[in-house]
Structures are given as structure tokens and as C-alpha cells.
Amino acid sequence: MRQSSPVLLATRETHNLVRGFSLEKQFDELILRCVDDGLSILGEDGSSVVLWLCETKVRLPKKQIPSRINDFSRLVEDTFGAGASIN
Image (cartoon, rainbow, N blue to C red):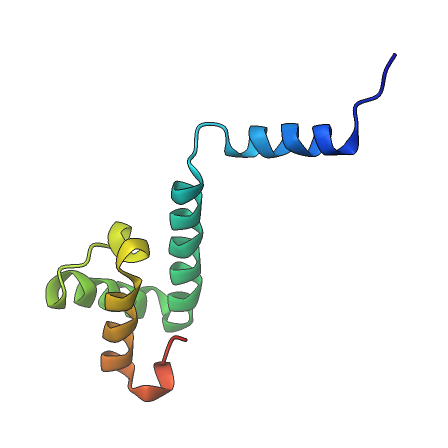
């Protein structure tokens, strides 16, 4: 039996990982997980308030944060001050 090369195996694993998901969608999901993780320090209520501010102040639903990350960053800075700068 012939063994597959490491490159071929890695390519198959990568293909299986991204099958059904575009890289852009995966990236957006990663950004949203990072947002959730970052907001978790505020607790559930604090996180909900920040997401509510996103929707009401800048009309930014959570699912659009990855494509409008600058708007989200500006809102966080405006809300929490310069110490909340996202660079």
C-alpha cells in the first residue's frame, strides 16, 4: 500500500476543514468569537448593552461587525474612552 505524502494529507485536512465554508465566512466567525470573548469581561448585561449600542447608535447588527470593524472599534472607544483603543 502506498503512503500519501504529508503535503497531500495536509491539503485533504484543509479541504475538509473549509468544505462548505468560505474562508471569508470562517474569518467572520472568528472575529465574532473574538468580539464575544472580549465583551465577556463585561458580563452578560454589559455585553448586551454594547451590542445594543452598536445597533442603536451606528446601526451595526452583530453579524455585520466583521465587515464594519472600524465602526465597532470607534463605538468601543467612544463608549469606554481611549483606554479601550483597539489597534
